[in-house]
Amino acid sequence: MNIRKLKIKDAPLMHSWMTDSSVTNALKTDFSKKTIKDCENFILASLNDPYNLHMAITNDEDEYMGTVSLKHIENRSAEFAIAVRKEAMGRGYSWFGMEEIIKMAFTELDLDSVYWCVSKNNNRAIRFYDKHSFHEVLDLPQNVRDRYSDADNLKWYSVIKGDNFDVKDVVAGCRVVRIKTIPTLDSGELSFFEGARDIPFDIKRIYFISKVPEGVRRGFHAHRTLKQFLFCPYGRIQLVLENKDSREEIELSDPSVGVVIEGCVWREMLWIQKDSVLCVAASEYYDPDDYIRDYDSFLKEK
Image (tube, rainbow, N blue to C red; front, side, top):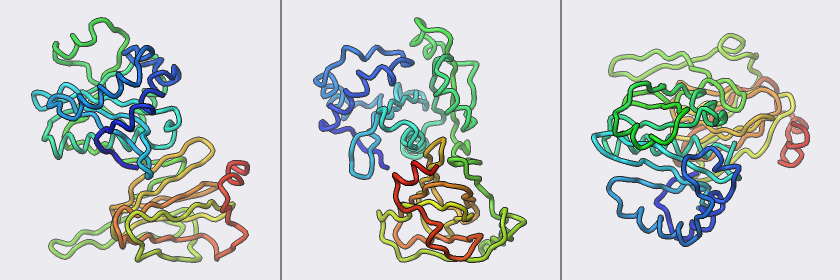
């Protein structure tokens, strides 16, 4: 997944979500009469707009999956907005786009806060924002409220510079574990975990994957019974997990954070940084019959 500036080639796929009522039914703007030409004009105007930042969320093949925005950039704050194609829903694109543009707001634009609103009837969006523990805002500047004077029943959220908004406890039903870490002044850190104490199984096998070029994907399998604990002691690896309920991702870049995978969970690993190391502690010895390597078979079995 990536975010980049919008391109004219994105217009047809942008238009596809604008005319999809399942995407737009909870949005304030009526997009139903928009044309591809309107999309092209929007993209061209966005390239040199100092008060609004609009970025494309794309897959690894640079196919447009949605638009994520910072609007009304002023007074060290901005309004967040996002819309993704139906094909992108439930696959981690919304969270990735939101996370990346909020990072841009605080690191590149040096903003102090980002805010947004959602209809209280939009249960899907509210579940998404509440899951990530964003602040609900009750006191907003009048000029912000004036933009939505014709709308009621709104719930407002914000994130403030310094908030640790990307900490997850669960990813696609898999528990995120904080590995015990002992810091030493000017001498680094020592991290450790113990089988059956810190992770929910005895360890029978440990292996690691290294010397992988940037941009390479590995994994593409699930296990029927094997339990695993994955962590990245060096580098940056995006871990994509899919269970029967959802498809989500988490970036493994902190040596003190790992993920326990239990049950039938599809996993893919993207090397964001070359030579990153992925370490795995497993509950059983290697058994080729425990693997599900075909995605369609996984969909049936899960």
